[in-house]
Length: 188
Ligand code: SF4
Image 1 (cartoon, protein in one colour):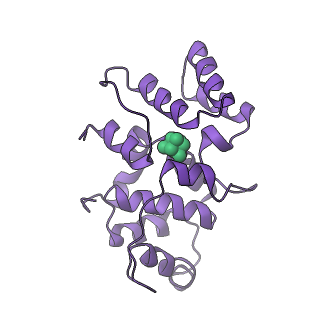
Image 2 (cartoon, rainbow, N blue to C red):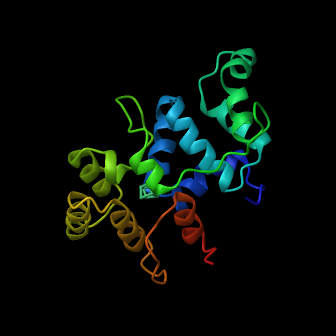
């Protein structure tokens, strides 16, 4: 984590470079001005790993949420954000979740937006999302076939290839932050 991203840049970089799971969380946050705990963890740790420093993270979340008072934000949210950055409690600096963790653990319930869209969205919702993101019909079919075969990370990798047609061939996506870095052009 470079630690130089600004809160005001999150919207742009996420829309351009983040995988579908993080786009889903970002859109839900913008629309609802809120995310439940599972979503705040998955998205918050992702943002930390792409280089959002603690000060910017606090500002990002306070702006994104409908917060009544500074006191309410401090009491209900700021501790958890600082905790994720290893500044509270056991002072462990938590790592962003991998795809297999997101796919296998802590399935979303209604009102949750965390998880992997390829694994956790209904077929109808996933198809609608793909069309909304301008994926051509043949490729939507291909992606849905991968999903029906439980090849969620392959579907995500294919989605990357479709949306980055000029990118060199990539290996299978194992981590949302790898997806982001590849999209940004920081290939290792
Ligand atoms: Fe996110 Fe991984 Fe699912 Fe892709 S495969 S949407 S990066 S959890």
